Length: 123
Image 1 (cartoon, rainbow, N blue to C red):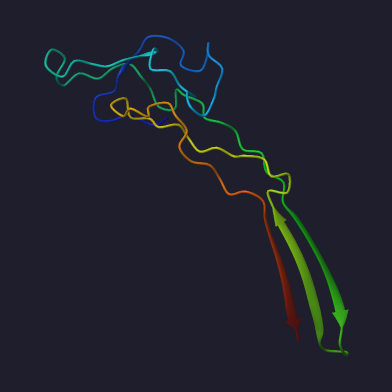
Image 2 (cartoon, rainbow, N blue to C red; image 1 turned 120 degrees about the vertical axis):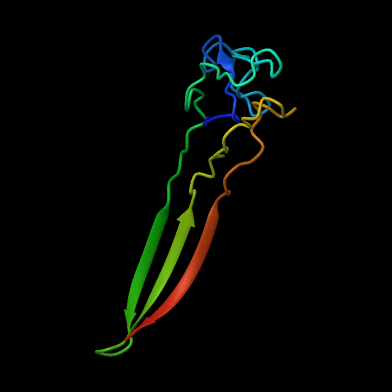
């Protein structure tokens, strides 16, 4: 995750270890210690950039096409394309604001399997 806000929290343990990753709790609050704005004003914690690893992406796209000749200079192309062929869920990044009640939760996902057909006249 890239920075939380202007004052970064202190990192007290590894946020990527220990718990099973689910969409409801990809990251736990426990490894992060919120700085006190009254007693630690103007200070920055030790949490660096990209300390939390998000879910990976698995994607397989396929494209098939066939040309049909009309005459010597013109032809028709039929094309079938499929994106995310295996229909694997690709989750977004977890919420990274410590103040949010949804901190550590994954709230979005990528598109499901998409298929499209096309016909193109080539001349």
